[in-house]
Amino acid sequence: MNNISVVIVFICLMSVLKYFEDRFCLACLSYGRKITSVVIGATVISLFTELLDSIYTGIHETNKLLVLILPISFILFFFLHRHIYQHKDSQRQSNELNTVVKTAMSFSDVLIGILAVSQVRNNLLSEFIFLGILLSYELIEQLSFHIIHEKKSSQKMCSQLQKIFLSIWPLLGFLYAYFIGVSEMITTVLLAIYGGIVFSIIVREIFSQERKILPVYFLAGTSSFILLFFINIFIL
Image 1 (cartoon, rainbow, N blue to C red):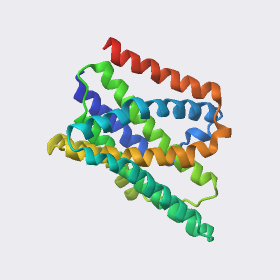
Image 2 (cartoon, rainbow, N blue to C red):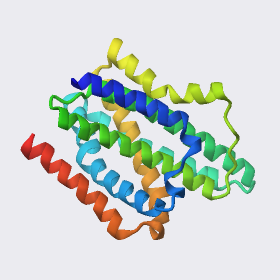
Image 3 (tube, rainbow, N blue to C red):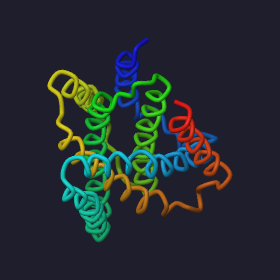
């Protein structure tokens, strides 16, 4: 199986997971705290070793002014959440939180589809590692959505048509990048925006739940991705 076949399987799997996301919740499982602690630890390492590296490499190869996009997107997303939490009406607050998170998740789903194509690795194992990193970002966003609902937010059941529409975003990103192509500058801009959003989610939503993170499992997650990093750099 070549790398593009692996990418196609991965994108189809992501779309299926998106469709059934309202039927399962990692954080709600009996081992939910352990699983989420591993995921958070792995994501933190991948942010510093993969996402930021890709962003700054792209910036230096295109336009150094693009470096401003990363902190600006972080700040905008941070103040957007701050504005929402200032609402005294809890129903309005929960509705706006749902809208913001779903919009961010849809954007990241499209980006995942684009990155899966535009940053295909030469080595098959490297490709699996990279796709695993993309999956960890998706799980972090799912966890942030769980935290919002844990704060008594309301969630309306999606219609089947709406669920299908939301689940195909990774596929749309894949098709666009595969058949039309994305320039290096556009990829860098999208990465910088996405990086700012992910950092904002982790700082504001995830680490605010630090008492629920189990240190041993958090370190297990960080250790596993550090090992993958060394394998990818020094062995492959």
